[in-house]
Length: 267
Image 1 (cartoon, rainbow, N blue to C red):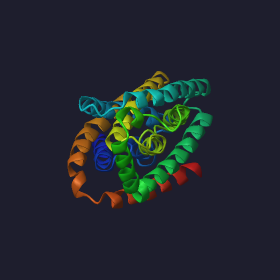
Image 2 (cartoon, rainbow, N blue to C red):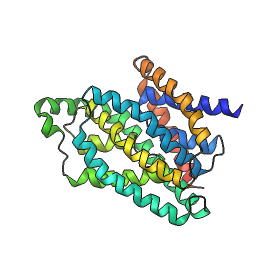
Image 3 (tube, rainbow, N blue to C red):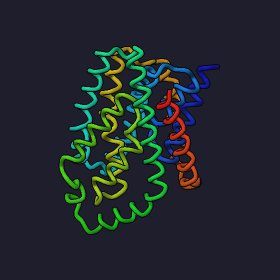
């Protein structure tokens, strides 16, 4: 019965990701911790590989459509991958199952969820205007200029922040990543921003997830059950996206994530 519950949870999260684009980590990790009582280090490690495998297919599809701005992906990875390795080294030194590491993970997870809630609310309030402005600017700028950040160091530094958050919490590569890209690459068209966000998350979550696996922080049977549900869920959500009130769903999600984040911070 528990196995079916994990498959259903994977399906529900996959469906919401397909409908809204909100990162699976910001939903799956709190569900595993609060509803199934999974230890934080196991929930985070398992969810990282869950994200890597689910986003791999999206990256291949977008690369075939030539939507991925690889220069942008490279700049983000230049900051996020070293930061992820540093965070893994710290977890290895502390021991992921120790009380100190668990407290660090849950506190950081709470902060990441609050940031994701703010980023999701930002999308609801500002996203349409931002999208129109970006697309208008993209028409005026050529492709090379569109992939140039406000300053070369910004994507590297912000990539490092996201890499640290993702390694400690499995949250940050989705809603926070898109918001960062919108601000740092104002001339990049929206489809390429989404493609960049999905593409750079694959090596980041793979490195962080395999690092957690080496620390014993991945539940492999649980991972397979979640993927069994999430893959059809994402497929269905991506086909229903045009028929659902996205603003309403995003607003409800931002409230839910803020509640989960506040609860974790106050533990």
